[in-house]
Length: 140
Image (tube, rainbow, N blue to C red; front, side):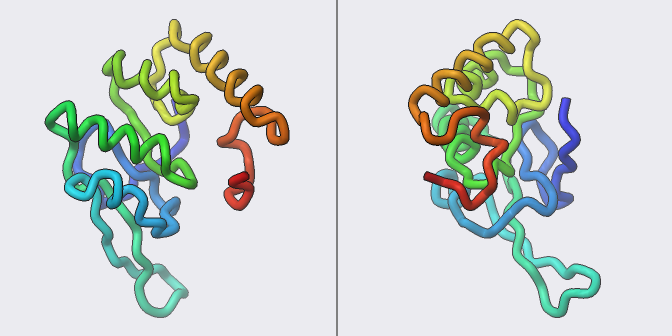
């Protein structure tokens, strides 16, 4: 399980953008333009509005699911999460080193997730370990 809170603008469903995580990189909308949008919101003590992305529609086709998974995999701060239990989606995310973005990862997929993280560390010897634990600015 995780301690992420979904942004209130997300539609109900398995994919969501975590609250207060968006930096408006616009990557989700470039990967899946029909599935994401931006909302302007006010914050106490901050003048004006701040933009935040959200899931405006859940994927309905295999092509849309592939677009959503690309957005999950490629987003800079890993703000897009999966809370569903579809095994194929969990396997796909685990295989790409993104199992930590699954809120309900099946226990038998944990070894695959750990192996994918180790493989990622071998590919990136300067920055071993879980990429999710890196500071947001350390993208190299």
